[in-house]
Image (cartoon, rainbow, N blue to C red; front, side, top):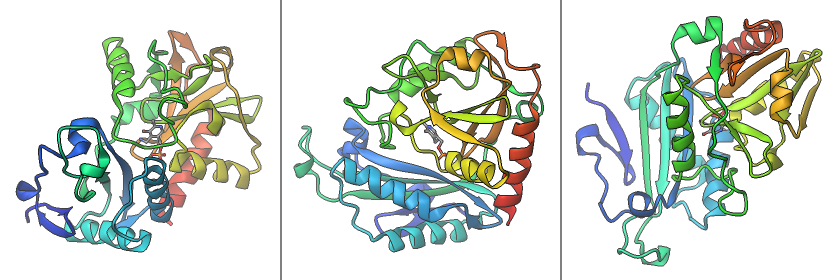
Length: 285
Ligand code: PMP
């Protein structure tokens, strides 16, 4: 069966799913996107992802030519057409094809693209033994330049941070914000555990409001674990008992070393393991 991509309102074979070289998503990164997961053919927290997509679009004055329900239906249709059970879905909305100038008013129609694919997880050893991070010299976007709350097609600063991390042998990289506080990683949110309490940067640290982050906060609250959304420094990371990352593709992944410093006892911690089990139950439900 050939892969089907949703493009311009219909499913087309992947080989025929092409966009114009004049699309401002390509020329200027003018667009927004979402990464979603399906478990057993059902998209996890679809409504939350669709809401975030529309909020990102609203923030860049991009009117998506589908209702939220129609977008959710198009995502489900793409998952079903590709017979994806446990998969990854990418929904992209670009400003559309225009002229060689910034003016978005010269773009004809926003372009909606939905791709459903197999999921590529981090290698199992990272879940078993934890991963190592460095702090990047590249900071997260200044919220007054481009709000990190917007999941836009401009990921270059995160990509530069990722390149820096990969050169140091790390597959994820910690990013600080413009105030020097801990923000998030290049594609994952960060959590710490200290004295049994969970700490995570608040949204005003200039981070993406992760769907997985929100699910983990709910799971922790339901398990009676206190969660504090607050300003976090590198010092807090270095003295944490546990550290883990959350993201749609990564789910929950333990971190055992940051900037060559061992976190806690250097093994994935008990709270991280408990939340991981709860998360697996949640996505299977
Ligand atoms: N932060 C950034 C910068 C991201 O790109 C992502 C998504 N890959 C996340 C955090 C995690 O968000 P979610 O749990 O919604 O995937």
